[in-house]
Image (cartoon, rainbow, N blue to C red; front, side, top):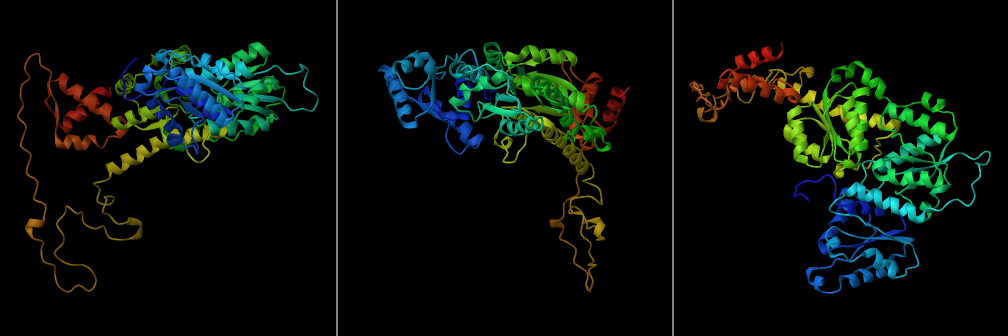
Length: 548
């Protein structure tokens, strides 16, 4: 284990909580000490759910360790059933309680409750949150799914049916993706039988095999369960994740082939504006922008494809914290000629971003903090996320409307960055400074606050001149900066370079998303030539040198 300030994933029991919270009629009894109840806040505060997760904690304390903690668990499980009357129950231990080795599964089975009780073995010190969610969903499906009563061909006139697998609580835009993909399938003439885990009951899980095929929306969560359903019940699986215009079209074609429907009308009626916007004159200045991408594997891979193939960005970095999908990310990175970053250490991610100096970062909430500190635009594309990434409005990532949302989300930080740069560039202009009146209204431009006021009131009707302002209230004239003597560097010692005030001012005219690179190149240029003070001339000499 590693002590860290930030983490991309929680322990695996948090993944189990995400599945339990997404479902209905399922209760989770978690053997955990009092401090592990913090996980409730992830759902009530960040996701803004209106009710607590369906979780009962044993909440043992230090004084209980000398007694019978197993009896505490049995009492908690029995009381949870009596109070909540769930259709099924999952039981497990948190990372702390795992050390006690009380065997929650065996203890719960001994209670002989009249509902299915599904034990979870989640190794907290080897695996993490997404794996825990996938394992929990797989165990639930394997325990509850039942073969259909009859294996007959679809009756004439019945529309094809599919299951949507993978969406959970705390998922990045999962609620909105379900709505978008359900509508897309309806336009193809396909009904959704069950969406799971989100919104499903244990009874719904039991009838998963009755559908004609499964759609895996989030492989990190549903990949294992879908493979088992395909192997056990011979259900075909659609594995194309419809994020981006190209992937959505490929998804439609794959679904149509399995369901035996005609995809042409839906493909002809594609509603995404991303292709036109990415080709339009207003967007051509975005072409070739350097982009760094990091997140869960599903969203990172989709972002790399959209950035490179649909928006014309130059992907300079690609990585994931999903070690279970490292192979897929490595293959995608190799196709882009990149060295992939497979890590769950945010400090490694920050170091890579600093070294690559991208003009846009696409990542998680943690990359948002990193990019803000480095002064680089950022758009969030993946969990973990904060409260602002659970919007009240519908904002999908999947389907054609999801492509529209992606374009807006990714491009707006760059466009706002351009506006900020222009504002900074013209801030000292006599017409555009902060105190200037709107020029299109015909008003005279007032004097800057730093300028001495006129001694004559030019307003209509003024008869007497104004008295000059007392000298004490005027800004003193800035003293001439004393020249910095050139200090010869000590042999073997690195040169410490400084920036002259006029050079710093000139540097600020460079767009902020490449300013860091310009500063680093200029300082390197100065060190190589033994220049201790960077002037405007040095800045432009460096520009000419690196522009060759």
